[in-house]
Length: 263
Image 1 (cartoon, rainbow, N blue to C red):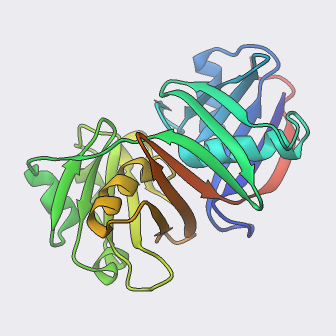
Image 2: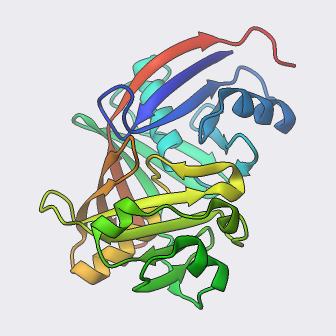
């Protein structure tokens, strides 16, 4: 069984978001997949199984399975093309817990076709206010996460949340965002998910299924460039069309290995 580690949403090693990619020869139990993800100890590890015209795709954090993950999907597509599992000119179709997702190559970029997960304004739990301890311009929520806008990129970059309080959320995690202070980007963000074992995710493709429609409406733009301001950092190009968001980024392989026996 082949195992890879890929840095996603970057073209430089040790930047972006590292993801595990495991190519399954046979089905594995959820317990074994969870144990592999725990052993990898990355924010997500993807598990792929060829079904002919498509790949089954599941994602696990070190603690639990998640419904949607962008960077591990980007990493999966990168490996399938780079290692010759799929011809480079072919679109890849994934069947997942969030429906059918697609990936295609566009020059140096990989573009993911994801559903829009637009947030709706919501009341603010007191523990969330205390956990973030920053000015809140907007608080919304979709089926996965809270989305919070704050006043400036400087506030966002200096944010030091209370992770124990954030574990109380009834969502996967909390996205914090602000308008970019640099003309290079439209907005910046950070993503916190201690409830699922990831205090801060370096670059979160799935969070941009909420960020893209939010900033598209605010800025009156259908094409956006985003920067996730974690320690590793990552750049995402975004395009909205109907009820889909197209998320583009680069990826680079860190290592590949073989799992001999994990049953």
